[in-house]
Image 1 (cartoon, rainbow, N blue to C red):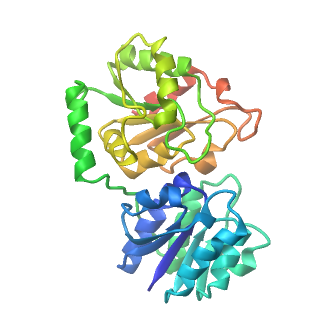
Image 2 (tube, rainbow, N blue to C red; image 1 turned 30 degrees about the vertical axis):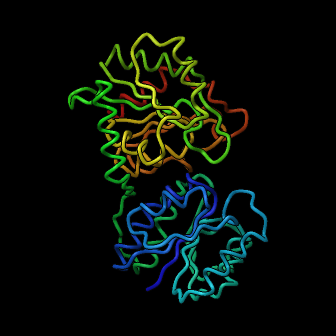
Length: 327
């Protein structure tokens, strides 16, 4: 059975679909074709169960209809049996329908549902990753498919991460290691971040209460947040913000016991490499967007999921409680 998984959005959404992709590959005994936005293509190639990746700019957030032509062409020219559509976009669903894929499976979302041949229930407050995993159950004739997100950073990135941690004196095998992403965390767009001062106080508390080693991770945009943290840091931290690519960042997170971050792709990258996480959510919904699983905690600003719910409503003690419940 030739299957394509079509994911719209960005890096977060593609990583959130990773359990589904792994489950489909296991159920069908064949690698899966993945169509995703260009920003996620490199990571998608290293997800478990992926055989080939189609980078389609029309799948990015806010992309115009004309950009979906590449997706239509790539789907049309292949002999595909099933398209698993991880998108509520009517334009994406119409493109898959026009590509004449015989079976089109996706979550219910409204007026575009007739474009799908199979649908699963989907509520606005349901975890998106779990809803998408239900699509795998449909194709496996109702059997439960146990699959976890898997991302392999590669031997080179893993070796580099180990060397960096050793050279900075934080990889001794017995100390609690906590990664903190204080800013944008490789997000496609702009992410509302917690204040550097609060991240610094959290790092101080983790060090004093648990003897933790704290590692800062993020992209070039996060250097300013890391610098601002230093004004209030009372303990030594290792700062990798803006210094590592995504694969090496994943390898560093894989060596940590926990990641703390706002609503960024790094939460899902942590899940993909088997590291627990505590996600900070304000205007976005943690119930919908966080990694699924009991090892991943959500600290949600109140009122949940509205523009008035800023991360500044979250206290250091709230996050510390979430961390200690995850350890």
